[in-house]
Amino acid sequence: MKTYQQDFLDFAIGQGVLRFGEFTLKSGRISPYFFNAGLFQTGSALSRLGKFYAQAIVDSGVEFDMLFGPAYKGIPLAAATAIALYEHHGKDYPYAFNRKEAKDHGEGGTIVGAPLQGRVLVIDDVMTAGTAIRESANMVAAHGAKLASVAISLDRQERGTGEKSAVQEVETLYGISVISIVGLNEVINHVGSHLQDATLLANVQAYRNQYGI
Ligand code: OMP
Image (cartoon, rainbow, N blue to C red; front, side, top):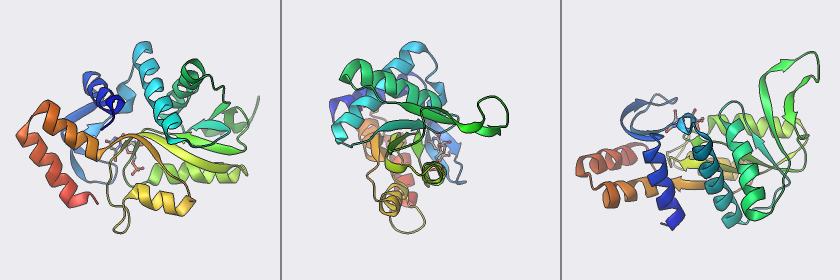
C-alpha cells in the first residue's frame, strides 16, 4: 500500500466518512462497511480530498482534456480535484457538472461549466455495481465526448453481473482504466494492520468472500 493510500484511509476514518457497522447498499447487499463521501464537509476536508484525487490521477498517467462531476456527489469532488490539479500539479483543466433536471430558461441545458467535449475524466465517489458510472458514461457519449477514465475514492471490488468486478466490467465495456484512491484490499489491509480489530477484519473478509472477486 502506498503512503498516500494509508493517509487517505486514516483521513476517511477520522472524518467519519469510512465507517464500520451494518449498512444496506444500493444493491441491497448488507455490508460491514460504508464510505459516505458526503461527510467530507469542511473546507479543509475538501481541500485534502482534492489532493488525494489529484495524486491518484497524476500517478495513473491517464491523459484527458477535462473533468466531469456527476450530480450530486460528484460536483464538489470534481471541483476540489480541479483546484488540486492546478494548485499542486500546475495543470489547469476545464471542469463541468450536470443538473439533475434540465433547465428550460436562462442558459438552458443540463451541463454547467465547460462544454462537455474531448477526453473526459469522470470524478465520482464509490463504485459497487457500476450503475452510477454507466449513467455518467451515457451522458459523456450523448455529448459526443469520449470517456477517458473514471476516478473514484473507493473501489469496493465487488462482483458485477458475472465473475469479474464491476470496475473490471466497466473497464472492458468502455476500454478505460478506472483510477481509485483505495480499494477493498487496502481497507482490509488497514483494518488488519492499523485498527487491529480481529472481529471487524473477519466480517469484512467474510463480506469479500461472499460478494468480492
Ligand atoms: P453503484 O452505482 O452500484 O456502483 O454504487 C455506487 C453508489 O452507491 C455510490 O455512488 C453511492 O451512492 C452508493 N454507495 C456509497 O456511497 N458508499 C458505499 O460504500 C456503498 C455504496 C452503495 O450503495 O453501494
